[in-house]
Image (cartoon, rainbow, N blue to C red; front, side, top):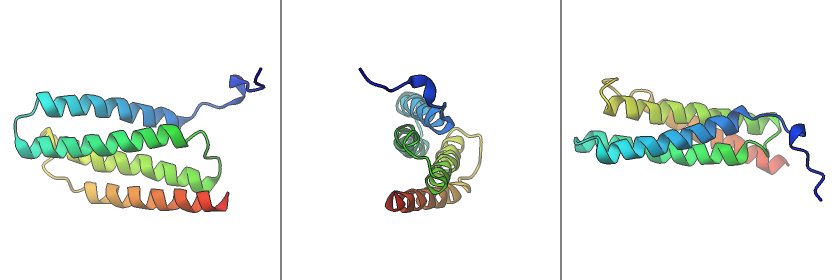
Length: 124
């Protein structure tokens, strides 16, 4: 019998956010495939879906094992970057924004987040 006690683990905002991002990405992908006819908007939605799903799964998987501040900072940058990158593309494709101006900021946040998480992994 395992000595693991589920009550000893704290809820994880990052894992929760990652799971929600992945779920939203599935819905966004379905909408891109079935509810959008414009090829450019559909392409933007598919790109947003890819990044949101991949980073959502990464957050959900990595959050529990990441306890140090450098690693956590990296994961929060992944969350922020995903929201900015995918959100900017999705909102532009659905006509809520007339620009994808925040996408580059999101992309840089994603890259920096992965670099921080990698640095933390080397320090373990």
